[in-house]
Image (cartoon, rainbow, N blue to C red; front, side, top):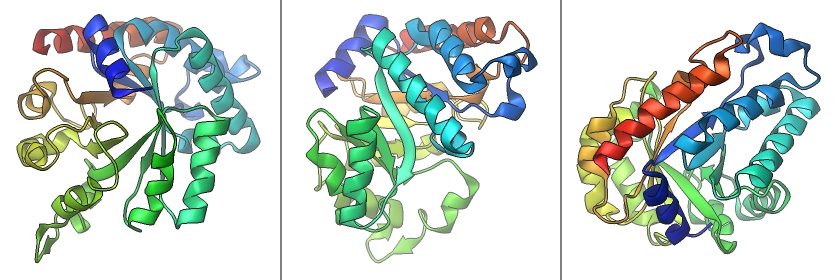
Length: 270
């Protein structure tokens, strides 16, 4: 999926919402546990209820890998369902891979060729050869972790180096590996006050922003500092606050309402 196509969808639907598909069997509505594939059925209903309010879906692969072969099957079914029914949605595999070149090449093949994801999240700690293999696929994206919203991010990302804070060096170095046409960055919503600095370094790249909602980030701050005037440049992800809006039989309806609420707020900023 190209940058122009993503922007077209955002402007047509007046939303830049990304719905995270992080199914935890222990949190699923009890009536779904009677299904042959509870994870897929949960996802299917969430997808159908939220698709009109978002432009992207982001399954976090850990929530599938935890269940072995059956979990991987659920992931494959989920992605296939999105591809068949909502082909214009940007599909992110939140896998946070990052390894030496030949291993990264196989990860890229797995997620882009077998699972047909549009993008994958990547940890850049091992350097250029851990990221560049993902940039060799036309129409595919590498989404590089830069400034995340978790508490432990302070351990390294905000470390002072001779060239400034480490996350800034990650941005400055990695922006030379790809382009705004095939590389995005993860910037946590709880770091919204630092988005102005981020935009000075990567003014044209799309940012995938988790942390709005349950983690405490606010959409207003993200938009204030992160929006690009004409191209938007943001995909704001929400997972738990949408998919677990209810754990009853109305879970999908509740998820749709929460997604609509966020989409309506986004439309105001657009």
